[in-house]
Length: 172
Image (tube, rainbow, N blue to C red):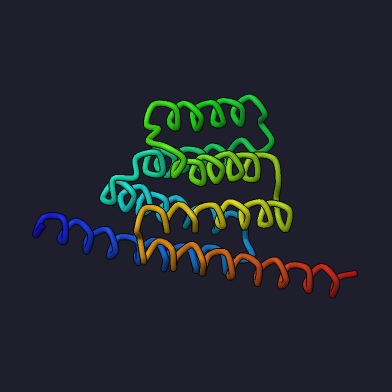
């Protein structure tokens, strides 16, 4: 029980680190800063999910680190997007434990499409849908910090979308 409690506490601490990184990332109006901060946040999320033994979510979160790096450099590259979608599905198939893995898989697929094929407001809308799926995944994994992190990411992302729309309207 002591080892489990320590793992749980460490998982919560790691998820709070991811929370801080994600809020700063989604508050940024610059896509490049968003991507860089999300790299670090997803390392923390992958670690958190591994500590909670939610293996599909951990694997997809780890893959997201590569996806973000590739999407930044090779935006709109359909071949790489399809490769990342295939890798996401492969991780889910290899580590599948049941229906609780569906939200992580959906989040991984949505995020891959959004980051490779979209920018600005459209990308953030798809990433908001992915964040909603991650909220569910965190609830199912038992992560208090992760659930709070993704909820705040979701809300921060929506606020940033409104800010971007306001800026676009001011220019028009």
